[in-house]
Length: 368
Image (cartoon, rainbow, N blue to C red; front, top):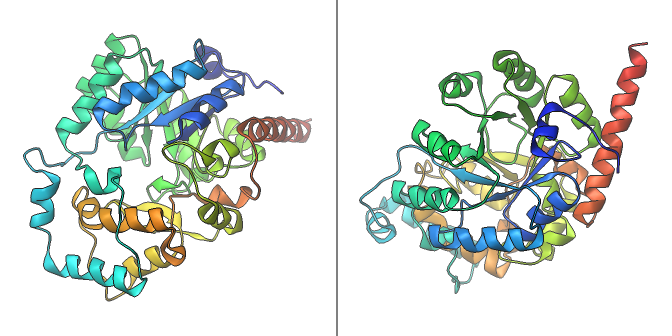
């Protein structure tokens, strides 16, 4: 595999400057084994489950670095429970969700998942943070929100700490909190995302960041885009959607089923859209009846996080459990267009690195 050296890659001890985000333990470990750095997202893991997942990753890569992604959004209720929130949801919203279930003949959920059993609260985040402080995790990245106190506590434990941002305004807010790297995530990204395109945001943040390393994210799924990111001054890239259709994502707690994988394979760059229907925050997903119903003129305005999750959690769990085809959905960025076949993480990494090197060589020839 071709090696691509950047200052940040050398600091992290990786051969390829690719950080790969996933909710899969196996994918996370496989990315690190293949020369990049796996990033495991703990958003759906209760605090007492975080050490279990970290141990499972560490078992596969005992001496290799990996990263944990944590969310700490502001404005979450402290004194509420899932049951108390659900008891006070607006009747209009409850009726709409019930009607969606009836319209698409969604059987009742029989499983408990993050979506229908957890309410995001400051205590939930603090528990996750404490689990990271007590762990041997090498890096921590804040996916949504952070506090200066959380950053300083992690750094005091020797962790390398970064954060995802979607605008220059976010960077200004984080400039003086002591971060070691920034991920500039453009609107093409899957999951929670902003409104500024990757091609504009990355060089803008690189200029603002000075010596602070910047990773590029958002719609990246081909090695030529990695070469472009490096040409814009980024020290590497952060990829998420790429891993959803890999072989390693076919098992475990967050396995991707065949129906959803087929939707990923069929989706092109124009087949994703933003919705607040799942979490209450803008989230890019594969377009489906779910995204269309929440953007319909008759739909109520989605509630803010975490109340929207409390509203739709049972229905989302049931849709996934029973693979209700028209409503089946997944966060995915516009880079999903590059996911066309089931491959191993190692194969994906091999292709990305070769394509990136070829792109860098093409660009070098243009400068002769």
